[in-house]
Length: 196
Image (cartoon, rainbow, N blue to C red; front, side, top):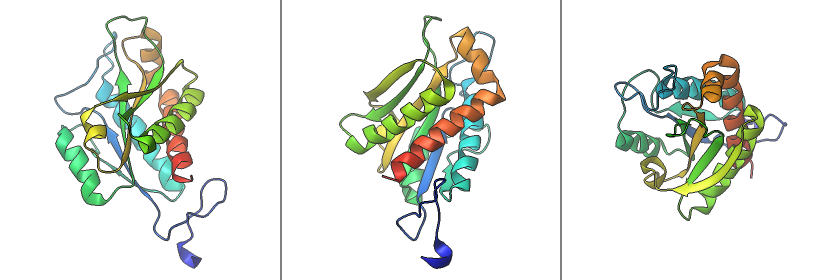
């Protein structure tokens, strides 16, 4: 491959001449804040910051990365999926922060679309690395029909980092340290999947 060699963090060369393209989708944005924590932390802020850090890590590994939103703006679910399709993305990962009516709910979970074996593998790779990075309860890999993973024409997963409705986890997600750790977990999970 000569000058086009793109190496993974452990020194392996990507199998194809063109490096893979990953679309990261920071959930919510603009007038839609997503979940709001007990002390006011908005999900849209966490999602975007984690996506930005994740992009930087993936880019250092030679992966091409596009975000569905670069700032605090509203983007329709339809447009998020359409953008990933138009770009010919290999992988779409939607980044979210969880909430539940009980403040006791806590931990990390990742979703794949019903019956998608590739999606389940991607979600599993991300979930394992993310739980290790954040040291939160592993709530497992689950199946769901969320629009962005249901309609995506490429392999996709939706990540729920932790619960903003839980005071401890809201405080965690407020910290830059945790956002960087979360981003690293997601990025390493994506790289693990791409290297298979």
